[in-house]
Image (cartoon, rainbow, N blue to C red; front, side, top):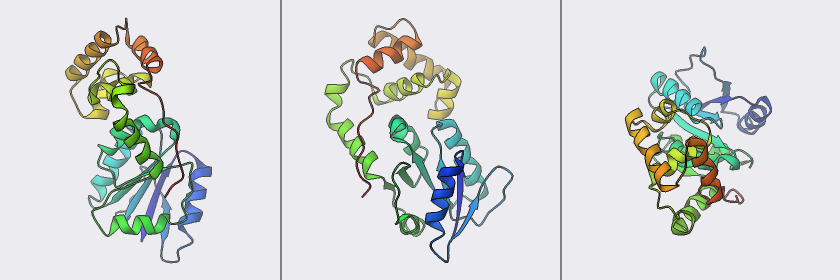
Length: 209
């Protein structure tokens, strides 16, 4: 099995590579845009930038449509969970938590149609669903919260449209709704009020199952 790694962190990449190479039948390659490994079975992406994740997925899916994908996020970017999952990834993992069974997890995904999510992120998702009424006093829709999360990262309307695969016109409409519902004067004020209301609060993480 050949596994490719895309990471801006040499330390993280080296650590993941060391875990993967414990298996004798596993080949690990570092990927970039000049690499042409059409036989890669899975691509592991470490990034906190949604546009970079999306671009990387599109690049490798065009090379090998059957390739499986795993994204490593940090707990501080939990808000990307929803947008990243909508990109059609196969695994979502917490990059702060080492998993000795990583190769086994990848084999499971490669050989089946299942989707695996780190327990820390899954518990955060469930917590968010159960407490939505408490943490969403303005009554924002799920899409409006996604737009708010991206506004907090200083994304432009065009970048938000690209990340969420919607039109710029639709993004502008969502931003107008956010301004009205949050009683905000501008985009930066939306993000500030979002933090004050707990709409952008990151849940605590727990141990990977």
